[in-house]
Image (cartoon, helix red, strand yellow):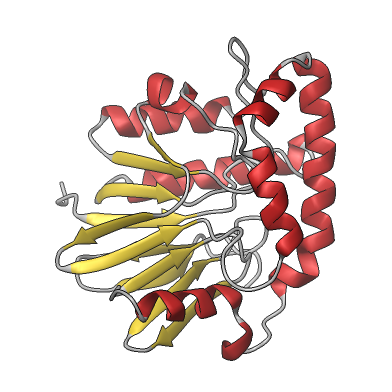
Length: 253
């Protein structure tokens, strides 16, 4: 059996959108990918927006995704470390995933060093210049008071309202997330350059952008993981370098 030493990164599965049938096809593809990489994976980082919407009530969670959740639990049980990042669509993760699946949940950034390489990992929402409206909304949605208020709504109504909002929000941002405006206008690359003025990182790993990007910046690399609605893109660190790849191959490249 191959030695488990590779580290995998993926984001923006957006399970649940645009409908159950399409989401199920995507879920099956992700599970096939997880089966494939489980042979040599030591760690798996799912860098936000795994779900198009997620909210944990005290005694209820959104329906569906049972095959994916079961696969994650099996991977953890086999000794693979799995880390979930909160994205802008699934920021309301609390203790369900650590307690039921054994995964680590990260709210914002995570800095790790592996084999002498330093990584800065973040979903990417609310970083860099601009997008003031969302940055304000993020603070509101992440507030304990807002979460307490939403939990007072019955799950049938609350999940329906939030799912509609989530799909509308993603659709309105689609052109912004899929168009490439040049190296000097990539807001997450700009944010990375600013961080490099204070501290060195070998790799910046982000999701959120919905566009696979591998960009050299000041001796480091900014990598955006893309998404699985169309690209099925991901990154892998083999102990020496990070490579951006596509699965099966991707439907669209």
